[in-house]
Amino acid sequence: MENPKFSRVTDKDFSKTLRRRVNQYFKDNNISKKGNANMVVKTIVMSSLFFGPLILLSTGFVTSTWLLFTCYIICGFGMSGIGMGVMHDALHGSYSKHRIVNKLLGYTFNLIGANAEIWKIQHNVLHHSYTNIDHADDDINTPFFLRFSPNGEHHKSQKFQHIYIWFFYAISTLFWITAKDFVRLKRYKDMGLLNKKNEYEKGLVEMTAWKLFYYSYALILPLIMVPLPWYIIALGFLCMHLVTGLMVSIVFQIAHIMPETDFPLPDEDGMMKNEWYRHQLATTSNFAPNSKLLFWLIGGLNYQVEHHVLPDVCHVHYKNLTGIVKQTAHEFNMPYHVKKSMFHAIKDHTKMLKLLGNNQTVSVT
Image (tube, rainbow, N blue to C red; front, side):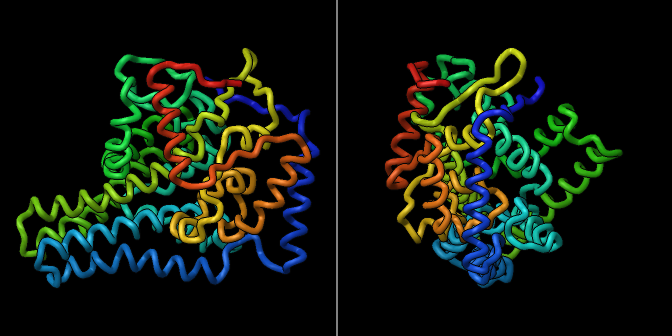
């Protein structure tokens, strides 16, 4: 399937107006679109939350079960913080104006077991370009027992997906770093997205090396150094990923798999009805915009609308830009979706999964 193309005729004035107003905001305040000192602090804090407890686990300092689980759970919060609050901006090129800084910080993703190059294809290229479009957005390409789009094939096994989805969300990062990256590497090669000479072979070797390194310091070293049964340590490692998996999956999915978001399809010529900016606004939702703590913990990803229309802007600025985006959207009769709290967003996401799993009517444009 060829990737769909967006209309270049409609809504051009919206994108020009939005960009002009956003650029004027940064000019008036004499600040950069990229990260600031707050990003540096967050990078240090999240890295410390992840690597600090692992250092304790790797030096024989931890000798009790409760302390081991505490360390691994803290690591889980640190891992999700690195992923959503550091790596995410770096791989979008919005952390720093210096490409080398973005590249180096993007490799924190490799350090925590995933793969930066695969993420850039899956997230930056496929998800951001073709949000909520079946077969194009890799975030809604699911196995047969899950259905994230009303355009996806329905199976009876999906009836209770709104109940068992939380288990799969919880184990998602463990599956991701162990198998999913390898599956995607092969699939992206077959899709022609890895077309440089020996790019697949080189990527496979590098990916394997990074993952072995991750498992060595995050699991093998604690197994050697901590004087507790191996299964206790393995359970602690699992708990770390359960925390990370739930946090990351919930944050990303409640931004798009919602009753009010659109799941548009291209026409027979592969053309989308809307221009790209309108498409992003129609397929994305904010949540908990007044929560400063949540904003800090999840890298501003409760402002997903701002992130999707301004992916080159660091997340530290989203709160100050939301008024501009919302006002401009209303002026041009564009949708602007937002849930007042994370609880309400999760509730509606669960409702949407139930509707999809039972093949009930969902509004599709």
